[in-house]
Length: 148
Length: 405
Image (cartoon, rainbow over all chains, first blue to last red; front, side, top):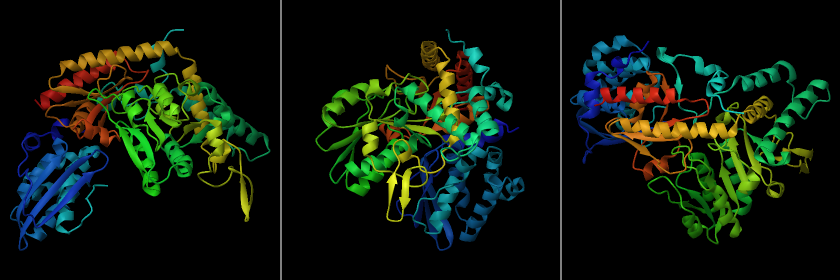
């Protein structure tokens, strides 16, 4: 049985309460909206690229502790990564959270705290929302990203 | 006759389960109600014994299926005070509103016309009108909702104007529980020659509905929220309106004769029931009506009033909890937010305590915007809920506060 404490770990509660990089970026090179139409969670994710490096990531919006913590952790982890590394993290994170492949946790650093989300099917979309928005921003998509 | 909630609970097999090892406190009947054994049995019996296509065969089985289907229509008609031909089977409330918007609306709404709604409508009573308005160059006018979650007759009086073609209003707000004075609203509208559609989806499980007394021109509801099956609902319309309306969907059963040069349409209600209907669903809904008729109506209403008052009082124990929607006249629905915790997190934690609530925008985003919240937690109660369910909710919310101090 899934245990609540696997989901609401201290790190997640902390990032949910005090999200990092939770601000509007005035000069992003790309940004995209992430929208979960089922529950109304909504974030704008901003990215500033320096060549093929992620110079800065920030986000703004509203949603639950899981979606906010996931976006916050994502913003921290991605800074300084190359385009290809960001894509790799996105794929690994997706495998861990959406497909429940716990072995991915190892290479994900602090993102590994979100592993427990895989046991809460109704909350998987919360954890992946900001990532989908980021992905859309990096690909220059103009439609809001959804987790549907 | 008196209302015995424990005896009622025993008729709902689903309530006996233990999610996460806890007693189930099902507080999401506003989304869909659970089904009593009598309804489940009626659907099963239809497929076991009476199934064949309705209105088509000449054999005994076909006759029984048709009789069961039309019998259900008759029961529902009596239950809401209508004639059977005024009861059109739909997939649910949403389809009912769409049918009226597309059939009546396209014939009566033109450029510059107005459709009057309230700020507490469910998306299903907004979007079909928006589609119509966009097609016709008409516009939506919205009656404001006050801080307690009420609408005021004076605003209807002010906003029903010469261009108003229809008033579409919910009887009970799904998100707040507010009970609207639809009878008085209909009177105001009729005094100006404007017809009224009432969304009764949240009303029928809680209050006795008499469409003649309300004088609603259209009244729409879903079977699944009143202990019937999913996929079946009802559009009631005054016969003279329905008769004058063009068909909506074309197909079998809605015709008298078809040739390539033209088609003669069937009489109401069949004109609006193209294709094979959900006969088993209709039979199940008829069984739900029978089941409700067998209960003490006044007893149910007193029981639900007690639950609402008890829950409203007990929720005050939770620090930082704010109830959204505090109208004096409410159905047993409580929407609330908790400072520092998002409704989804509340929902997940409550789930682990065996408490099922809805967390989200309740398909009423304009209303959420009105109250400045992205979402709420909603505990919606029905006749099978008890004070124990409320206690379990309060216990769960205390747990939420421990995790999100």
